[in-house]
Length: 226
Image (cartoon, rainbow, N blue to C red; front, side, top):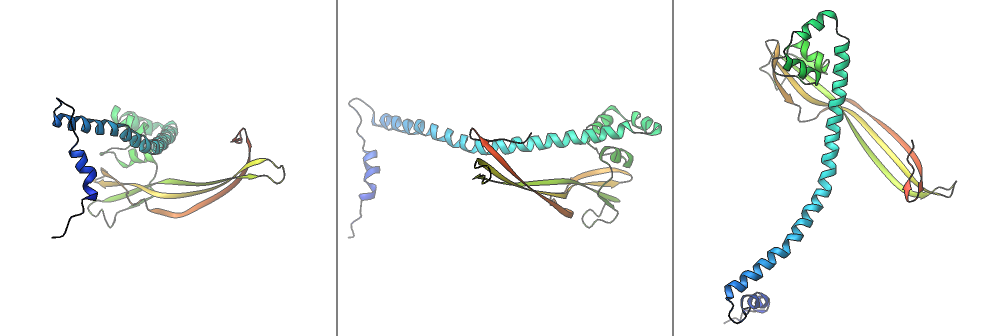
């Protein structure tokens, strides 16, 4: 009969045969060991959570900041349109419900809005069509687009050959595109649904801008331009 090599099972076997102290229940002894292992693993779990949060929180904060900036910009544009309404359009706006007026001021549209209300809130769409290949059951489909900006920054610490001073060489590449944001679906002259444009398709051509800066390093930090 072939002998089984038990070398790899010795640590586990020793753990299973751990002797209890006199008068101590072996089961309880193993329970103490188990609790020790669990308590010992708690700091490790917290360390892992902190590690992941350190990466996720900055990106979440950045998204929140971008969303707040977009909302603020939208409200400013709507406010400008409201300030320049004709006397007739002002009467039309004041005839709307409080909820509708609040939505328009906040740059948001709702189901049931007519074309005048949507354009007052969002401006004219990027395009409008009566024959959309996907939304075939609607009399009109409007697409609204939004700018998408991507920044690529490369930095390198160098010694400026002219001043012989530690310097940060920064190269920035900014790409600006117009991407699909959402569709407004119309039925009998009012908004029937609002659907996000998930593909974020790029419309037109993107523009690319590059810039270069040499920032002197003082006390270990680059001096940013004012």
